[in-house]
Image (cartoon, rainbow over all chains, first blue to last red; front, top):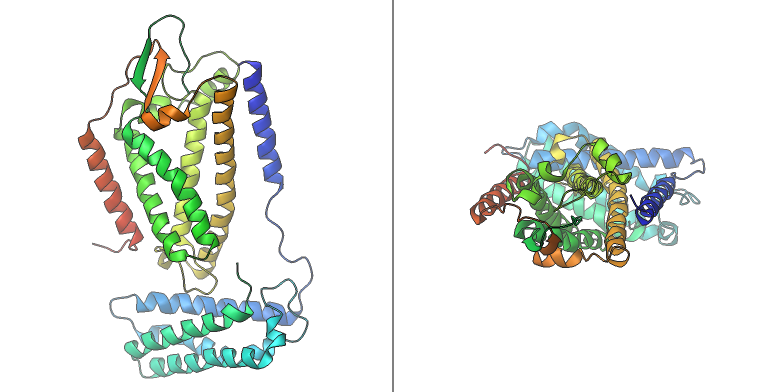
Length: 154
Length: 225
């Protein structure tokens, strides 16, 4: 191989090596308060619940009863959302400072999810797949309504 | 990346057939399209482009077995020994088509794109609301992990693209060898080269139909027919 080719290969390997070093940033190095870890875990439960609901509703004959545990989770946790956000817990999370600047609006949006969760619960109690689908739509809107204002965009 | 052989006539051959060229330039458009559609939050477009990417990759993989001589993986992929020999200057590479190092980069780029699409198929957003078509096969945590990997793998693809561009520029400036034009017209004039066998158009159509059908079925969620 001639000299210029050797230089190209060596430079490329160095570039790759450098790029490899730049790896992903480590998640927040600060130690998070318990409430932050709890709420992040709870929101993840919501995410898993939505995934399960979405998949159940995509079936030929969705069964509202099949998603009962997820809905129960949602219904019991959603009303607590405003209590998960004490002052000063924004750092290193996706929570925007707007939460504490517009607390009434935040609480209102959070209650939107509670209301939708009630609808979901009713659909589960009456094993009504159609109602489940409708309630799921409402819940999705409720998530988005709050996130659009109060959660960091990607 | 062809080497010229001493002696022999300089022949103008069709080096890259139409499918190879079409797929290549489609990738050039799709990659930024995929990135910017994600960046601007246009996930519906992102998904459609991803599905087109899936079809193209499936086609290219099929073409690598059934296409024109130079398009076939068997014709240009060599083992590590060949790469080392080439780097040490011990061989000049084939008379047409990729040298062993170029072949390695093709494999890397295609493999990364296949991985990226596969990850996208299983990925989901944290809300569990928006996801790839195959996420019903995996758990919530797995689909989140797929989404994160999907983001990281894109960086690897970028690195490969940068290397690819650097190589093209190197060949143009240092070796005085224009590699862009042949990728547009398909033709290259190479000393002592013979025309590689070209696949009949019918094969392109068959591979395209199979790839499109398979991609469609996957994109719809791989439900039993």
